[in-house]
Structure formats: structure tokens, C-alpha cells
Image 1: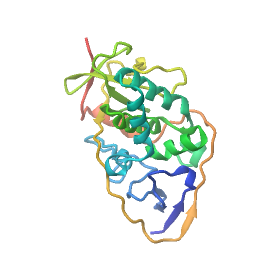
Image 2 (image 1 turned 120 degrees about the vertical axis):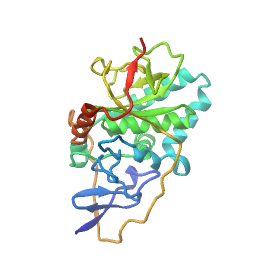
Image 3 (image 1 turned 90 degrees about the vertical axis):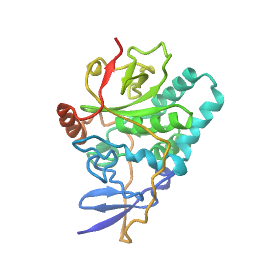
Length: 264
């Protein structure tokens, strides 16, 4: 089985994989997480028929906390009011990340970035590029850094973030997880979106949700194999539906995980 190492330019990396490697056509990082596939035990969201776990957030939390988490901490220091804090973090992600398909950037159908890889682009270049799961991961980590509870939610053809704001009045829907009301949808992929706006097509639908914990995952040493390189491109490339969302759609039909319901 051929394995090649990928060296990503430093501008892409913060609390980063220093080397990536290719195995059987997929890209893996220093944490042995597959960046080009969300499904399975090594997938970046560990999607299975029984649920999902967005393991990639652990590259930027706990002992791995770096730029994205610190950005959240800075917002916490600057905005004591939690509603304003949550709004400012949302606007930061919305305005600093330009929606871009993975194919247009990396020439892979799927390539997940961790929160710090996006944060370093923003801090060093003023802008980052990513698709919906990249926005979701970045927001979830920044919210944790800001002292707020966050979750990642999956729907057919989409991923987004939830933030726990029980008394927030600006949302068009307040959601419940396991009977706990107060969760607000954070949909940063649209340039005019506001915190709390939930797309109508997801209202009343059964979705998959995982509350993020402030826990690190262990970094490992990648295989000692010959190196190659990959250079991300810029440009939006339009909307692209990732293959992993097909798996999500199937899971939703099976109804095997937590429901989110509108508050009546």
C-alpha cells in the first residue's frame, strides 16, 4: 500500500499537522485523522450508522488550543455580554471566511480544515476560505474559547454550529437538545446571515447534533515516508455537495440519533 507524505505550506498551519500523508488516496494528518473523508473511525467527523463525533475539533481544544481558541478568549475579554459576544464571533467567522468548495481549493471532493488552519489564514492574510463544515468547526472552537457551549449539527447537504443562548431573542427558532432548550443556530456561510437565523428547510426536521467538549486529542507521529506537497488555491468554486452528506442523509432516514425540535 503506497503512502506519501504531504507538506502543507506554513500559512495553512497553526496548531497544525506538520506533515500530511496519503494512504489509499485519502489524506491523513498528524492526529491520524482522515481529512478527505468524514466517515468511519478515522474520518474527521467519524460518521457512522449510529451517530457521529466531530473529532477534528479536538485538534484545536484542550491542550491543543491555539489561535482559534485564543480568538474566542479575546472576544470574551472584549464583550462581557454573552449575547453580544456570540454575535461578534459569528460576524467574525461570517465576514472573514469566504465560502469555497474543497475541489476549488484542494482538488479533492472533500478536505476538512481544522479551526486553527482557518484562524491563521485570517490573522495572517485577512481572509480564509472554506465550506460549511469548516465554518462549523471554526465557530464551535471559538465559542468554546469564549466560554460558551457549542455543538455541531449535521443535516442533509449541510453542517452548521449551535450555540447555547437560552435568553436570546433574535433567533427565528430556539432549539432543544435532549430536552434542554436554548440552542441557537449559527449559519455563517451566507454573507448577510445573522446569528440565530435558521434556514426554513431545516425547521422541524430531524437533525444530527453533537455538543462539543473542551478536550484535546493526542497528536501522533505520521509514517516516515517520502514527502510531496499540496497547495490550496483561492476562489469560491460555487456550492459543492460533499459525498459524506449522502451518508448523513441516510442516517437521518434511519432516525438513529438525537432529535432537535422547535420550541412550540
